[in-house]
Image 1 (tube, rainbow, N blue to C red):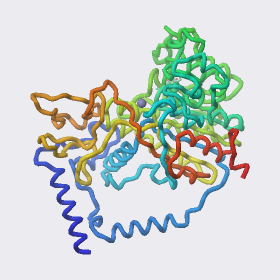
Image 2 (cartoon, protein in one colour):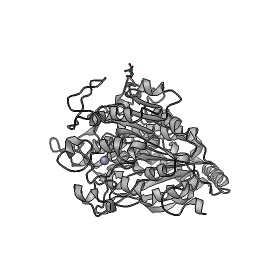
Image 3 (cartoon, helix red, strand yellow):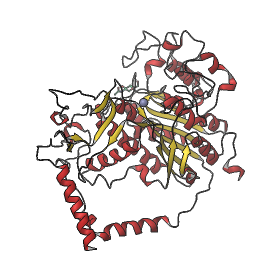
Image 4 (cartoon, rainbow, N blue to C red):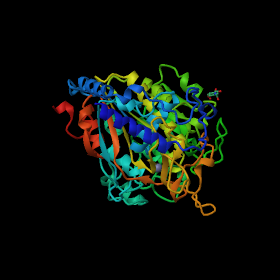
Length: 520
Ligand SMILES: *[C@@H]1O[C@H](CO)[C@@H](O)[C@H](O)[C@H]1NC(C)=O
Ligand SMILES: [Zn+2]
């Protein structure tokens, strides 16, 4: 016992020595950059660890408690009346780990031992994310997998592997098209909805309603020379899009005519002269429908609304950290509004919620933003959990693909997750979070590796070091997590091909053409 304890303590001491060089580490000051104030975390590299953790009994008791909580777990074999799918775009396991620490430290608590909302979900597994024709996936082929049940080619949505990227003619053939779980749910009489922080026509949300050989065909500005409908048009007029009860996100320009400016001065980019927002409103004129373009209107929504369309930005919605005056709804607020509309359905609902800007922040090598978007994603998950019952609601959380963020080095427990202070052999410290590639690349200066410590580490727009120069960081190919609670959530355990996910959700909620829980 005593020997074991000594080894532990020695390890702890050694780690602190390595991780805390005698240079002045820039002090954390979240209050300057975060909308959420957490004055507790003003100290750098705080060893914010419970002293009991250096005792044998602490870990033994914690493990025993875990077993007692788990040993009587039962399988929930109810039919899932409702299914909510949360998609963290680019939310790799490294992102989850870093965001967990970040969230804990924001609250002045232990970061490493903290838990995000999905960590409380009883079942988890892995999703294998490659495309039919690509080793490392994009958000389009993956959306086709996790929403339609088949693997397809890079950058294509809602069409099978017969359709090459950009092949409009092939994408028009019925036999090449596959429907999504949103379509299956509508056919079963359920309400359906989609929520995202990106454009509502971006690859992930488009996975629920669009058929296209090119994910970038978001408006007719790009499709006008083809026979194919753009994605915005499909949201308003397509067989699935037109039936959505809820669609909330960004990307208003894709719905408005070129030259036309709306209430917020947003100018449209459509060449066909159509105002798709007006078309949506007139198609729903006999029903309780509301179109909103700002947060106030969303929060003041009447209870009788059955159809809700909200576009809060011309392009993607703002990063949470950039929306300092809270002008746009948070993902949590949009999720709550969506569930309010959908849960009036007697037959249940299917809701897709995307935290879309985790990926975009990673592409720019901006970990502070990526982690904050992940924390916001976690809050939306918690809200959905609080508003639903696991007896009748299956909640599935996953990611489409991993990303270029890595977490490495031997920082001491409690070290600021965005701080610096890991020693290297050239005498220049580096941060725990770095990127494999992307715009954070800096070459040598005066024959020396760039010294990242000279930066203001509280700057939300600070690009973290990258090994390989790229305008935009790439995705990476590791498997991603699946976390689930509610009916049949135990079916997600193990390593799953990504395209199995919607089949399990369809099985649990008795929609689609496959074998379902209602056949049991
Ligand atoms: C939100 O939109 C409504 C409806 O167009 C408008 O009346 C209101 O002034 C807007 N609020 C803000 C804060 O822009
Ligand atoms: Zn991406």
